[in-house]
Amino acid sequence: MKNLIAKLKKRTMSAKLKRLIAVILVPMVVVIAILIGILAWYSLQYRTILHNVTAASAFNQDFKSEVDLKMFYYVSDSAYADGKPMDEVENARKLAEELLDQTTEKKSIEAVGSVRDLCVTLEMRMDEIDDAKSYDERMTQLESNIYILTDLIQTYMYDYLYYESVHLSQLQDVITSQVRILIVATVFAMIVLIVTIGVYASRMAHGISGPLTSLTKRVEDIKSGDFSVHEPVRASELEIQTLSDGFEEMVGMLNSLIQENKKAERRKRHAELELIQAQVNPHFLYNTLDTIIWLVEADQKAESIKMVSALSDFFRFGLSRGQDVISLEEEQKHVLSYLSIQKIRYQDRMDYKVNIPESLYKYSVPKLTLQPLVENSIYHGIKLQREKGSIRVDAVEVGDKIELTVKDNGAGMTAERLEELRKAIKTGEKIGFGLRTVHERMQLLFGEEYGLTISSAEGVGTTITAVIPKIERDQEGLLNV
Image 1 (tube, one colour):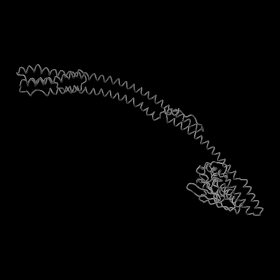
Image 2 (image 1 turned 90 degrees about the horizontal axis):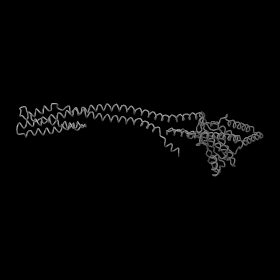
Image 3 (image 1 turned 180 degrees about the vertical axis):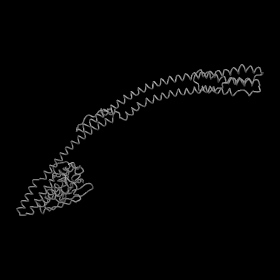
């Protein structure tokens, strides 16, 4: 449970890398966003004030003189009169309203607000002149109202331009000062960020390289032959911890497989020894020699020579120059020599036929595969009945496998005995007329999909099938024998 909780607390390398990227990018983005925001704010203010100053500068510098002159011509009914200068006053009022919408400074707002109000008042006073009854009254209104208002409008517009110019100059100083502060703050923030990233990256690199170094040393130890299970390397990264845990688990499984392989090898050698010991059967040798003596005494020289020759071939092929795997052709010769001996012994009690196609001669088979099966048919099949028996040995090619069949028409066995024999072959019980040893050796050499199968019926006979892979003589190394 503790290991599971510890594992859940660990982070993947991907998550740590994403965190490192976040540590780098997030502060940089924040700093850059702040800088851009501040600069954008000051830039907007600067552009607004500059626009206001430019717009105010577009105000007609001769506004007073032109409006005063046109009003004089209008009041005096001069030939130069062209109506009241309402357009000039209206334009001045609209300019004041536009500037008022974009102005933020208090004094500037007061000044441009006064311009707007005075323009409205001026338009009213210009209309009131039409109501005057005499020339003197109109002139009085012109001098006491119009001239004064135009003078005030021009004065307040100049004041507005002055205040905005002063504000623009002050803003330039503030921007310059703020930029200096921002540069210093940015440099300081970058230094802190670089130090933080360096420390974090160093710890992360150590957290990765340290366990990897330990894991590499562990691999070198295994290459040197150390297959004992060690405590897994402790790492903060989930991938490395999983790799180390799996690695030690794999080493444990490998060690178990090595031990199992050693046991299997011992079992295989033991099976081979049992098979060889069973082959050099004292009873078989005694009975064969006894038959030879009987033939000599009966003056059956040809038969005795034939039997001695068959016995010699039997042992020569059985030795097979010390090889554990021989060709099907050699195995056929070995079983034929055995059958030849038994035929002389039992004479008219048995017949046999061996049919192995020449096309299969080149394939390999474990030594002493067929002879124990034939021996089983003779002693536990043919010998137990009074009628003449027959044994047939066949080999057929089935895909990438070869089926070797030994069939007899002997006594057979009951269903209960057949099931007992099949179970003994699978479990390794020491019954089964030597078949267990043949079956075990084939599975040790080739795998569990190969081996013996038995079918039998009481009073009908027995068929034993040995399945082996198709492996040519030049591929014997694949058997690991």
